[in-house]
Picture 1 (tube, rainbow, N blue to C red):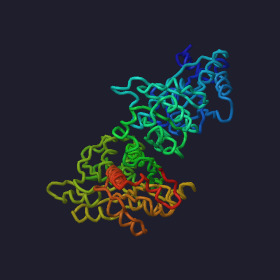
Picture 2: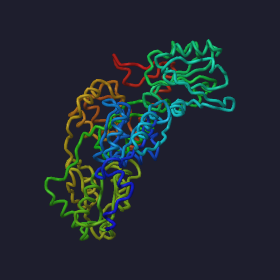
Picture 3: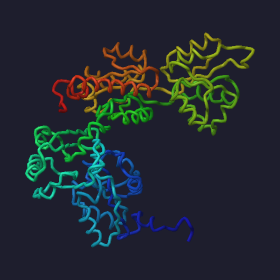
Picture 4: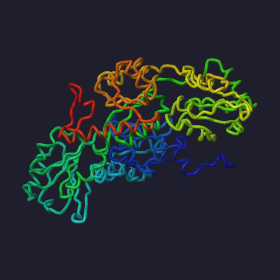
Length: 535
């Protein structure tokens, strides 16, 4: 038998053609809500799964995005999970059964695993991050400290709790399933001897950007937690008093802000990641589509000119231009070595990073504003004694401005202005997104160019006046104002990282002002008429 035809035990377990009885099941914890809390082992299981069985309404889409193409998703809301798991495993498939939090806590994994045992289906448990520890951690509440050394976990969903057993004052209580019985919990604990002044906190939607924590006392718990959403957890004990000092998640500068990122998906990725770190919920809405030029002859001649020594300089004004040249190089079987002997300029840090990834280190970058104007400020004039060639290659978008071209010409250079790619307006986003843009459902929108302003308004409409408008620079601000938008934030330098940072600083100042004034903490979207307001 040739090596290629051999199958390992793992192959046989994952190959649906190997027949009945060869599948396996992994009972996997997916964490309490934040997809970033998925364990490495759980991520590995998802990447190898043939079938995933999960309550899709409780599963963050980022988790299922870790699955390979073609994976089968079975929803437990539509059938008994025992039947779904057994059916897939008996068909020889590798099954991942996802549970919220940890599969060993407050779920039905024991019943489902017992069914696997009876059916002779091999299974394993992959522990996950439990809400018992994660939610207090995200609320800024340590479950133990130097004085409190004991934790007691109580699930009150089914009622019938003997509260006398939990009257010990020096133990932290973590109470699950109490969303509909807050009054019973408070009365039961006070009746069992806990003082009515005992510190208590209730956190809803823990570890998500909808998280809300209320710190109070037992006698005020019912009054101050009305309307809090499920799932919610109650924490009782002296450790709760540390929350004001240790709160880190809900105090992020853009916590819970829904931020519109109108760029191409590839360009938006790093920006969205940065916004996540500030607590925001970025939503990527492409406003342009990048396409090849209608006729490729210009680019073909340009690449040949690079190789044959036609140019002294090549200037990259965007990551899209880098990508366009790189794709042409691949088409011709070339790599970064073709830039040997050339001088390379980049308009900013992101473009430079794209070049470095390609294997090319730029020779010239703006020292001030990252723009065509900033590049021209540091560009050397043509000197026939020092520069053997006076030609510059400028691969750009079809709608690029003439600022750089005119400036280089004035400095004595001859430019080949080549259309490396076309930008066309993207299709309109789905109707709920359009309604959110016009109706004030977004807290902020980031405009990274004048074209994103024009294109977003063209495909989706004008943002509501409560939405914070953040722009990358003066030209974008001017375009936004021409369309009647109020500009609230402008980056100090023209980079998307600086723009996200400027928005975060704006959010932090706004939050501090609300706290100082004693006002409720409200996001911009909650300031519009009829919006649901956090208490």
